[in-house]
Image 1 (spheres, rainbow, N blue to C red):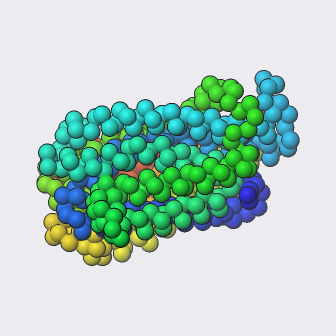
Image 2: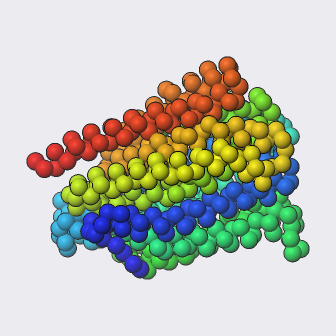
Image 3: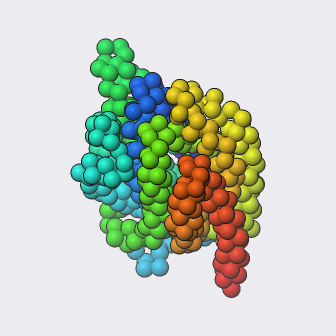
Length: 462
């Protein structure tokens, strides 16, 4: 497997080696989700509304797994960077574990941690489906549709989340090509299976939403098997004696992972509240919001890919005391986000209604989605800056600023502002609040990370 030393060479080249494979994987997955939404849109607006109601819960599960992945990536990348600084380092401070064994041990323990959490979480979520979605505003007619999706999706979350952690382990080691390629191939297979199971092609029963969940679960199972083989083959997990010291590893991972989980959970809570506000305007409005979110994910997929790459880059270089490369890499990521945000905002503003019509032809759905695209994309660049800053804080092993930024953006600004503007301007006011909160906290995060890095660099020098 190809590994790259992220502490050497051109900063842009190092980031590109991480980002391009991840971009292929992330973009293919997001495109499949958008196309899947198009398949679901051919069923009915009610099916689109039902899948939209599931977004916050799916985001909760993904957010917890992503938090563990972030913690794993942070500790592994800094460990790898330290080995670059002190090649073939000897025992750790307690004299028990060799430095070049530490990465595999951390990988093993992170897999155990996320698998255990997901089994518990998915069970609790399944038991809470009816009261949870009723409280969110789902009508009794939508509950069977929601069940048909989640009854299959939830048991498969262990597969999905373990796949995420495998990818994080490999990227933290500087190995981005394999997870990117496997994610891309998996997304293509998922896309091929979707219409077969949703519509019942080739003699299969038409499973509708259950078919979408089945296609994803089968694909994730295959993806996990392939990625797990690579990380085991390259001695990144499951080496001798690496089931020992689990508590110590879990503590290190969760030092970054728990605040990252908290940060990621704010988004689903906010999404559930915003969905609740929009539900007052009917199922078509909820469907329009869901369509806009799926298309937005496609528009922002390069930013998502870069946010997953900047962490390993910052972590390795910080571990190797290359503060100059940390600063240059983060600045480059900011500039990319601002440029990309401008690039995608114009076509979404001009053609958002036509793009939405590809998923759902209902005039009400298209109107809501077009209103979203007229406002929110203007903030994509600064939203990306916020993502880069948060990922970089986590990579430095300083997750609390990232959590504070997310809490401030969602709970202090976005939700109250959305409530006030919704009362005055309807769902358009909610979209204005989205754009303003993205922009405000993008600027705040930029300044905060710069100052914090200066302070930490001064401490490192002494």
